[in-house]
Structures are given as structure tokens and as C-alpha cells.
Amino acid sequence: MNRSGRWRYLRLAQLVWKLPTYARVIWGMLRDKRTPVYLKVLLAAALAYLVTPFDLVPDALPLIGQADDLTVLLLVLDLFLANAPREVREEHWERARSGTAQLDRDLAQLRGLLGDRYDHIRDALPELLERYGDLREPAALKDTLARWRAQRLAEETGTEFEPIEATGVRDPALN
Image (cartoon, rainbow, N blue to C red; front, top):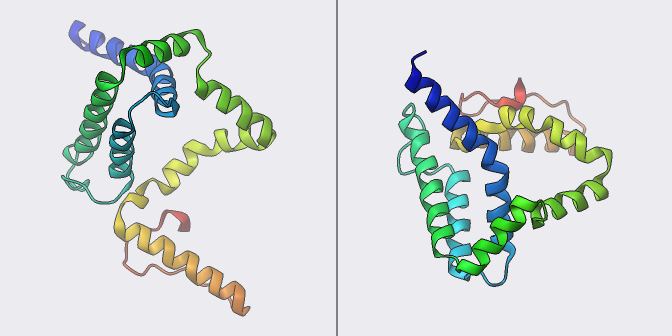
């Protein structure tokens, strides 16, 4: 690996290392009453765009399809941070750095409510994301909903459930 490649991986590692801080800042600012509502709506719209199966560039196109999601998210996050009141932004950066961010308190409260279940969910999250990650695709979502509906109907009527694939797209839950 050449020298520039190493620096690129080092910069990427530094960014990944900072992601929890960024999440704490965004979460805190989102919950703060001093953050303008239009910025919260903008962030909510970007998150909705990420989870809906409709894209500007279809995800079927390798790399480019996923790049539009990342681009939209980064642009909206930049707008969100840049247009928030300076005092709110600075306060939440300081809280995130010192470990007193609202996200930390919320996670601690959730951990207290769920007990061991919290750790189980956290540990199972990568598997769940892998298992259900392709539900952004409309056909996979239709297949999964059809399977759940058929399973529920079979339970209600007391008949045997047979997994189906209505659209021919692989249903991640059948694996």
C-alpha cells in the first residue's frame, strides 16, 4: 500500500472514531427547543429519504446508488449544523466531548428500563441489519409483509404455514 493510501485509511479511521461524538451532537441539538423547527424537519426529511425505497438514483446501480443516500445525508447534516444557532451548537459540542450529552443519558435510561434485554438487542443489531437490510427494496418489503400476513393468517385459522415468495425476490427472513 502506498503512502497516500495509508493516509486515506487513517483519515477514515479518525472519522469513524468521531462518529459517536457527531451522533451525540445531532441528537442533542434535535432535542433542544432552541434549534429551529425547520432544521428538525429538514433532518427528519433526510432520514425519511434514507429509509424509504424511493431514491434519486436507484440503489441497483453499484456504488452510485448508495452514494446518493450518503450525499443527501451529509449535505443535510452540514446544513443542520451550519444553520443552528451558534450557542446551541457550541453547547452540544461541549456536552458531547465531555460525555454529558443527552444521548448518553437516554441510552443509560433505556439500559435501565430494558436490563439484560438491552445488551441482547445491541449484540443482535448487526445480524438484524444484515438480515433485514434489503427491506429498502420494494419487492423484498412486499415479500416480507406477504409472508408475515400469511403466517398470521395461518396462526388465526390453525392451518399450516407455508413460506411464500410472491415477487421472486429473496426474502431475508426465509434464510
